Length: 203
Image (cartoon, rainbow, N blue to C red; front, side):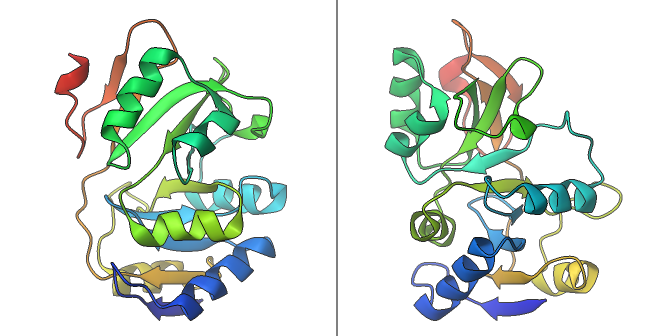
């Protein structure tokens, strides 16, 4: 695994470029978000997606969210109602995963049985820069150990995933609280998971 320590607000361009190169070539990386570290790849690379499913030991029905750069980007990959747009405009970028009806452009491997997808726009400069420079969304599934516990220590993550991941961008210790998950695919919002983001707007 290539391992690079980045400044959280002014990340070194050369390290971002290395990560983008790995993603462009079908690699798998670990990167920081505004909540926890995520395992990611280009959502359009089938082989890389399969690698992440194997790394996570998850079946094909598992909802993996992916990171978009902004609201405009989201509209390319999901069907967004007027209500969903207003709420996301208010809360993004931020520690939320929004479940929306999938657009045809999204690989079906990432669809749930209800044909929905989870989308993030994290308030993290490194993650958003990666997506913008790559030109495609990247997978966002939390880095956990074999017990399902979120890992916050970059050195521990490196030790555990050293032979499974191509590159890691470290921004130091991160909180171990996952994003809040809100389903906006129906007429009424449904809170799926209460996490770092304030969900009182939906109650």
